Image 1 (spheres, rainbow, N blue to C red):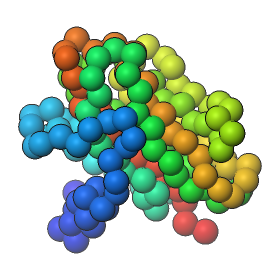
Image 2 (image 1 turned 30 degrees about the horizontal axis):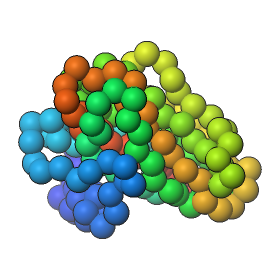
Image 3 (image 1 turned 45 degrees about the horizontal axis):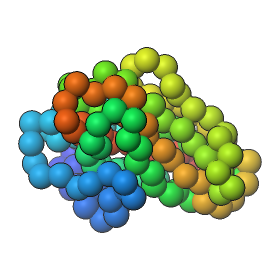
Amino acid sequence: MFSKTFAAALLAIALGVPATTSAVAYPHTVYQAQIDIQLSSVIAAARASGFNLLVSNQRGQMFGAGSRAHFVIQLQAGAQYRFEGRCDSDCRDLDMVLLDANGRELVADRDYDDIPGFTFTAPYTGGYVVTLELAHCSAYRCQVGAVVMTRSV
């Protein structure tokens, strides 16, 4: 169970992080609650595996199959990171891709599921682009979220 301080810190991080470039902020809904619960569980599981530092915590909504949302993160060379994405119950297939600063694909999870994730060790210090791809959603819009975590050094 999260402490009140930890929960408040997560909320502050979520509110302090800018929205993704092509996803749109969304009001509190049942679907948002689904994402919040799923990502809280992801964070707890990652912390139990030693990924105890939250690098990015993104939320938004995507409109229609084929849409993409992007956000930029700063990674440190040699550090290991855990990437996880989630979408609401209307979503059937969410994919996640990590690109380098030149747009080259470094790693991706394009399995037919709504829980993309992978572990990645950064080859260089600098900016990387995380892309969420909404491959299939049975609704007009789907709520999505992603977290990136690392181990403390």
